[in-house]
Image (cartoon, rainbow, N blue to C red):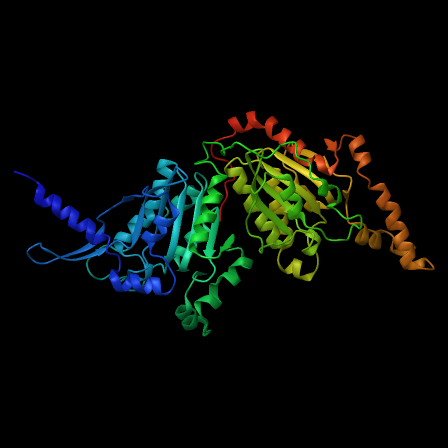
Amino acid sequence: MSWEPEVKEIERRRKLAQVQGGKDGIARQHASGRLTIRERIEALVDEGSFQEQGLATAIPDYDDDDNLTGYVPANYVVGFGRIDGRRVVVGGEDFTLKGGSPNAAGLRKSVYAEHMAVQFKVPLVRCLEGGGGSVKGGGGRKGGTVGEPVFSAPRFRIIADAMGQVPVVSTAGGAVAGFPAGRMVAAHFAVMARQTAQVMIGGPKLVERALGVSLTKDELGGAHIHCKSGIVDNIAEDEHDAFRQTRQFLSYLPTNVHQRAPRIDCADDPERMEEELLTAIPRDSNAPFDVREIVRMVMDEDSVFEMGREYGPSQMAALARLNGQPVGVLANDCRHYAGAMTAEAGQKYRRFVEMCDTFHVPIVNFVDQPGFMIGPEAERNGTIRYGMAAVCAAAQATVPWASIQIHKGFGVATAAHYGPNAYVLAWPSVESGALPLEGGVAVAFHREIAAAENPDEKRREIEEQLRQARSPFPRAESFAVHELIDPRETRPMLCRWVDWIQPQLEELTGPTTFMMRP
């Protein structure tokens, strides 16, 4: 006796589960310029590498004779795939069914995605588009059980655990609200498509009913909102660009915290010295300059991957490579608030340091810090709290750290730019102290300035005298920095440092005390 009839039924159900929301649902998805979840997975992972889990998971409907009369697929697709040959877990909502709001089978698969990634110790990529829970079907007077058992593990524990174990990426190709929006931000890297994606706690109808405010999805949570809110790290031109950025981001990180970040062969000369670095910092200490060009000239060619450029813009954060070694790069952008640490910049800084520490990625910091942002708005935003969180993240970091003093370093905020046992290099253009000269002189010498015949001239005279005393040469002579260097020597010096820290990186694996949280 053969089991062929049952096997054929298995195959039939697997095909039914692939139907998604049918031709009409798929057509509506395409008409709005969005991919289906299966197309997203296919575009993200290496060709032919997706191995789906729960091939026949669905909500079935049977007649009185136990014949299958209806079959609604689980509206969450999850499984293993490979990105650049490395195994990952990938999953996401099927928006063509119930707008991605999870049916019972889909919810179980969505929860399993984090469990899979943690169990098998591989990165997790979410392709999100959905509206979270629904008020339909939520009643509790039908004789069945309601809610979660009191002995259940916290529902969101696995989401937090995943962030401390494996790289997590969230992408948004369409509208993401409710629980999926929570998953969106519970990631080390979040990216949304510019034209088709929105991220919201609650959608327009919910907002209008609760607050009486009528807005579109894009007005609530479009890319123009979240590039500055910090909800996402980057904006992609379309879904394919989001997947390209995902692949690039993952290339800098290990598969899990028990492995080291992958160092690759480098064709860029570690002894390369860029002539333009000699003139990169203007002699006028108040003149702006492009710190990204400095970073680009020091790091391996075409290796800089910036995150969150428009959020906390006075602070640059990027992943890059130095002689093939992945590193986290931090740099102040003096074109925004002179590089001062705002509340947003402090939050961005802390999260980035915690991410690098979680995955044992060394940090290279280009220091141009005039201090915490001051003024009434800074006080309303709680700048000192978020700034000190950044300082503490650096102070407790465990990764190798290199700091290059390039321009300014003033006040408590400067402490955020030096991890324990940091390798410190200084350029001749650096100026440091308790306060910037301009404000500090106005405070400390206000009586002398006010009594002078020409107060402005007296102020400039005092500033120039003090500026001469802030030369980096005495610090180098006192071994307050490891080396005072020609700016053109920065890449060679850092590439040598990369070689020195290799034994540390071999030993520096496993979970950290302070893992990154959303």
